[in-house]
Length: 401
Image (cartoon, rainbow, N blue to C red; front, side):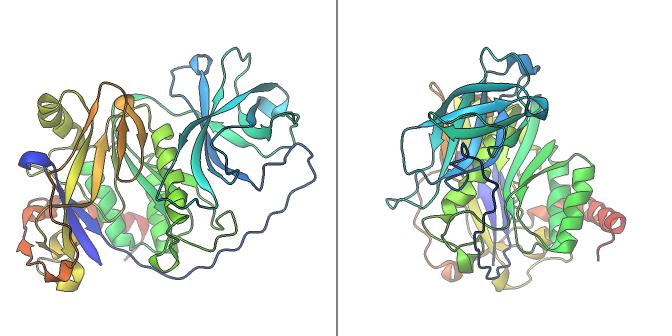
């Protein structure tokens, strides 16, 4: 089990990342039940997770809707059409489905490829409420598999966090500490796709969801396709699982497009500035003045290994384990500016034309973490009184121990 810190280039920003994982084996089987619908030939081939419109002030200004999918069609070209439906599936509009992004990971083709399809809504006369895919030549029958269209909000100077997928078991107290830290960093919204979770952690999720601080979107407990896999380390599939995860990252990219700044981090990772600046303050006061043409900022990582034992002050995780490695570039994380970014995955950013990603310096590959001499970092002690007070208050309100 590991805990890690992040640091940007040239010593400009120092950031802390905590990694805690609890794994169990989960076998996935795929059972599909579907009423007869001749047009719905794709329901076992293209698995639509969600459909998200452009972030616009009014729906009449929306020109495209993005479908985030796992695609088993094994085609680099789209032979599909979008079927857009209005309220009660009465109004119908058809447009060509165009591929926006296809995820590439390694040289082996997975069973299901993470992909984004674009559906044009130009010249439509009604507000699209549902969308599905059909093969060219098939009818846009209301019986096809559809997803409700999500219309994301615009928060011009807002900060968001993409937490990807929640699954298995999360420590509810550590989770509360993570959420309260994000609040101290002036984060406006956190997006996560929820697969399955222990009851105590789910209480924490529901608490922050009620506060509109957390947005939860569904992720299927039974993964589609025939490949047996899961997100636990014991059931991770080297070819397919990165694509499963990428669907969540694509979902973040589309849902959070109306925010100014987005951090892609997990529930065991904290980005910490030396002066505890918020993410937005960090962007405005230090990053953008130094790198005005940047679309994203890559943060190096310091790992704090819990197997090294308690080296700090309990009870908070961020002050309990304070032995860490020097900043490294493995498994680095990113802060990105949506309006300047073309495509993202967990560790990579593709900027739009005219912008750049600012990367860390080269470093020696980390192969034997337990052989690295740790260093003591007491930075989080400064924040401990405020953070601990907030955590104790939330624990009491949720009813967790």
